[in-house]
Length: 171
Image 1 (cartoon, rainbow, N blue to C red):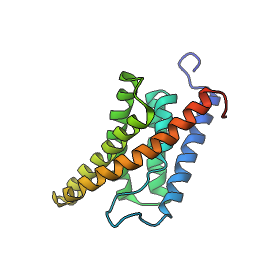
Image 2: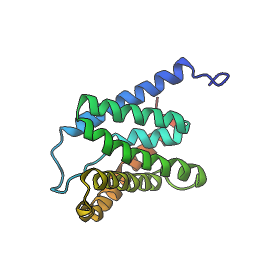
Image 3: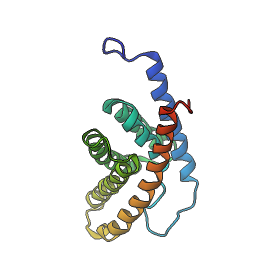
């Protein structure tokens, strides 16, 4: 950043990260469901989110995630996707960003698990509100388990990328 203004290089980095997250999101939509339980998926685009939480400012991370949510709904899913994705992403960021700052020695994968669980919590809350029914809460324990598994995987991937870049072995 130069005098509070975003540099062209920084903007290009954020745009590339947004594009990568969007591509991963769209490709993941082509993967058949891993389980019969709605809402459980790997969440591979969150590798980019976790990476951004640790490498960029909170508002820059929010920009990348917001762009991915909106563009993902436009290109691949639909309006309801915006509601569920935005609710999950907002709660995820509201948890991961402070946790990553307040507990810098916490492993990246652990913070990612927190983000994934919060993401599922946000999506479940959105489903309760949109459907006007608490019946969807029956899925919540399964979503939490799925969030722990996917959060661990995406967090380990992000941790690997971050460590490679810190050690000068990547990009």
